[in-house]
Length: 404
Ligand code: RFL
Ligand code: PHB
Image 1 (tube, protein in one colour):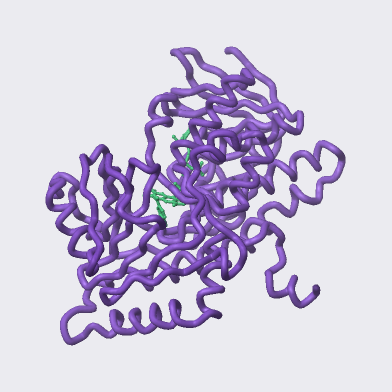
Image 2: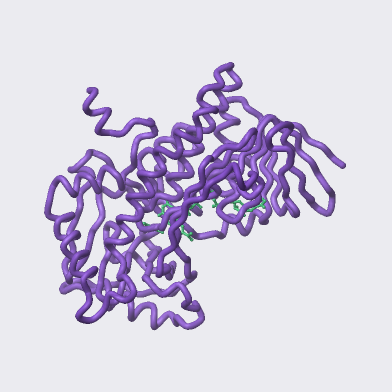
């Protein structure tokens, strides 16, 4: 059986795995990536759209910022819409930071192009991927082009998403999973039409949440809250546009319609695993934590994990083992704050089933919360600080500010 040796074997070529391989390469650390999907499938996957300023900085420092700088849309804030009114929250004014709208699909494309140029070792379309002896002498086995392969590595990184094989390889008694489900899902579309807004609109409507995002000056991305058991076949383009008009419409504003090029329904969950490390296996990105998409944190968390992990490996090979030993704690202390923010945004902006008619306590309370959030500079600054991204340091902002 062909056997390969490397320092870090990475399972999964989503944004976390591809970025980790690239960042390790930049520090002169050899890695091999094994991915179960074909490269065309990965390039076609439409997902996240918002990069925190720190994510943009990370990608730029790693030499991946060319197209991002040319095509990324820098947004200085977002709109929060409720009770038929739209309110702007100006992050740039509030905290001096911005976000950049640049699709995960584009981030992945840039990474794959960079890896191809560098001749990185990436096995796409790998079958039967399995990890072995994660506590002692880690190995990854898989089949590629009908041939069995094995990788011997110093470490394995599970960057294989929520449904991957790495997290389940950790013994059950060494791992705790914390989870919350939500009684709603997002129906998302991509449409070939100029966005009808300059910045993202997050909207709470009596019929449910709606959002207007974008991918470029000619492509809009829109979302609707739906029941988790809805079938996409039951949502014609016309029905989707009707619902978007009803929820997002306000006086004096028009939503532009265009051909729908992609549509899908995504369930929502909050999930955190502790620990993110067992023996010589480390988890990164969605393999270790999931957030509902309302706070735009999933991709950004994956990038933050990888930044910490790549740095920890570089320090390990330079003789300092402490950052690698502290990786899981560093990720989790930051992750729980991101979980809280994502859950807060989600609950504030979605209709809760059963909260109907004369019993709409939640809805009116949510309107009160949105009123406060858009009316108080303190509340807006807190939102701005969290939406644009928490620092990578283990210490909280307030503790840093106290110390300063
Ligand atoms: P991924 O992207 O799931 O990649 C994991 C990769 O591992 C592969 N894999 C395997 N490979 C080998 N062997 C196995 N056994 C394997 N099992 C799986 C998979 O094929 C895949 O290629 O995880 P990663 O890299 O951790 O990246 C995480 C992000 O993809 C995710 O957090 C975001 O997309 C979440 N998200 C958003 N995040 C943001 O930061 N901002 C946003 O605006 C945002 N919007 C969203 C989102 C996610 C959404 N959906 C569809 C879940 C909007 C939506 C609708
Ligand atoms: C997106 O553009 O896909 C997007 C933007 C913001 C979110 C989630 C998704 O919170």
